[in-house]
Length: 464
Image 1 (cartoon, rainbow, N blue to C red):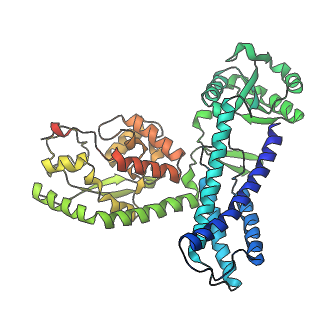
Image 2 (image 1 turned 30 degrees about the vertical axis):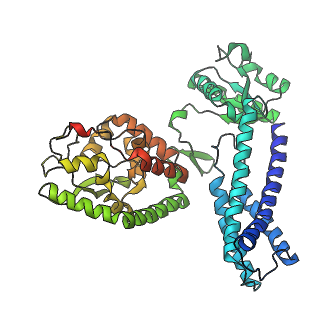
């Protein structure tokens, strides 16, 4: 039933996306020539343009399909389709402009085409967002459910059950368990491992989830064969589940499959390129707009105490490379720069330094580190080599942070972990950021930084 519903939903999605794109063209022309004023040299409703527009709509939905916009989304976050839709629309809009040029329609309005891109993107993304919200709502009400049979009764089965209960919007319904001992819900015990095939034959199961702990792993082959025999979809929760990243990559050597436990979204060259482009454009714009502020701060630092304007310190960056990180100097020149963390009542700070640290203005020179590629606008905060060498021996996965460029701000910082706070909790949040990275997350962190996250929690009143 789920497969049949998904098929019809995909067809409806294809048709509705094509229709919204088709309508967007006329809305764009209406805005350009009726609301904004002007004379349409070309008849945008002529047969030739309708033919081109129809071909465009057919092409765009094929692009959406290729970019997995119509793939099942129970496991994906709301809004995950936005980036593929924007990318496909951009490529197809550029292709449309090229086609119109080749047929000598050089007088076509570029403003109308830009409006067409914006309106079609807005309508299609809005429709997909509304669809996801609607599906979440009806699934919470017990409709459009995916019926699951769980094989196992140990730690993994219990963990899976808890996560299904916490996410009712995904629409998973555990019909029962195949287990030797007591499963998470004893009343849903449908039989022992020997009864698996019989249960699959007697029930309408959409998916078999194998959640066997290490002591039962020998039964894996039997469970998979039974599911394949009945044509039931199979998912496996491996015993090393806690080590697998959210988006693992799988490599094949002959008939051997290798799961890359260190993969992350930024291993993708396109994703990494998009993040780097945002860093270059964002840092260049920020440097230009904030240059008067930085000049004023530089003068204030110079007047506050003898010494250089900038505090330059070695930090560990991506792939454990050492770089020179810039900050406005907030303390008197001292000998504890290489290993000492500052605290709220640190006597080394100047009065002006206390202010720029409280407001994080002292971090602004790191925009130059971002521009040249040593840092990113968003990422784990960089540490000095002394602490990196110390923490890597005490905190598991600490150096996984070095897979990406360090950032001016990060997920840990906007969640209140700055300065002299729990390094273990910071690492945990940094690793979550790396494993779940997307441009939307970066934008969220930057917005939270701009609207309050830039304020340091150090108490100014305690400073000397």
